[in-house]
Image (cartoon, rainbow over all chains, first blue to last red; front, side, top):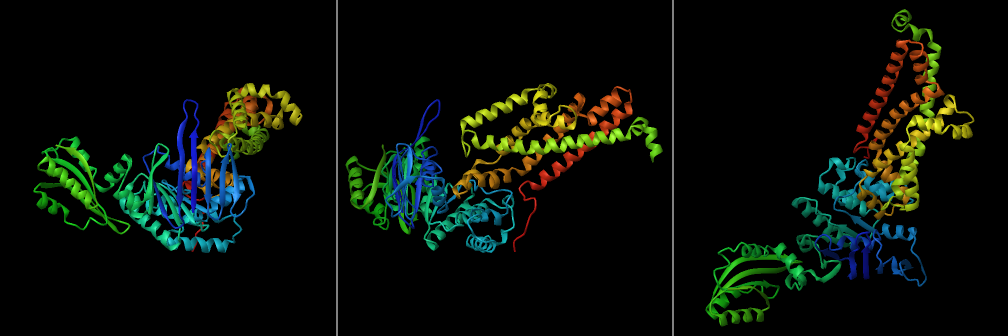
Length: 360
Length: 235
């Protein structure tokens, strides 16, 4: 488990200080794929770097199973080894131990261009007391794991983006870490490569019980592989929870925005902005979210029969999240004012999340 | 052959011994000063890279001092530096003339130049690679040797070439103030005795040497870009 408590960080610059993290608390259970989503500048990069101390928080504590706790007290980093009570000032040596147990992959792969695939993956294995044969065997094993055995002697410049990220993943896993940190690992990849890398990460998560903390600005990534998600805005975690819960019942404005862009429901905002005749024909424009219990029911025809109103479907979408269906509809309800309200009440009573976008 | 050479450069042929001695002296100055410049320049270049703000061993004091000294020596014209350093040269090597006396000012003239060049070459290494190495638990020495120096090899080869060529220029200038070598041969026997052929031959020798350096440098830099110098295949 990874537990970040009360993490704060401010970048001090001569002209103005930038608050990157404000009292952030997150808990990642072992074996989970945990997504951190937010726009650029939200602090997600800084947060993930606090886990392996590439960034040093100004306050707070970090506890990692199998390693121990690092606590910042009065600007000093103190380390308590797991199972012990004695604290020591955090040293380079402690950090090396920590980092060998935490793999990390990056948006731009960060492979060494003058090293072959073999030497890139062997990098973290050298100077760890392993023999040449042990290193060779481990590298080949890793290459099989990421399905790149035939590229062992290639240079990064000869690989595609997806292949480079596979090499980076193999390198990050070289010392058998239990946790993998992923910093926008698919943001520089084309859709096909993105899909195959996400599939690989999910496979590794299952096969090796690898805990993955990934940051991304793409909700699609969260949707396809995460178990839990934290939404960040201006250095704070504004919403956190099980992925299905967050997608079916987003609370914060920013979360709704993220959810809508990824489901295509955000299209409605464009139609409104452009004053399309589809949406300004009169009537109440509502967005309905159907979760597990309501998605199977024929509620639209039900309400139009029951209340004698016209329900015009503007946008519709159904997707699978962690194996559960999640449906979205934007409809224009036409009819008497009272009937429209009654329809909304009825839908809400049937476990549909209804949000009124505009009343016409 | 000897007759033909004597016909196109009569004066060179009558001073063959002097000419060969000069070539040797220039060679010595180049190799010794070059070797020392390489070691010191690389050291200070790395020092600037790691101690700079945001570097892996950030240290404002060290960075400012090395940066300042480098700038000071870079801004003194070499001919002035030669004279300025005479007392220090006497102190270090006991004499201010000849090959021995030239080494000290040559090193002082070339090290700041090479330091800057190394700094620029290392600044070309993607900070992401350094971050990745840190995240893998690499220490400072590991990052310097396995990331910075290793990844910057093509650029380092280019700056070594540029520095070597400028060092040849410096040795001839040192020759003008009593260090010997091709520079002083061209002045004393060519210019002062009105033997134009001697000056011409000196130009040709230097031209060939510089071209050779440039060709080797270019080839090595090209071969090491995105590639190991000695590639080994794993089966």
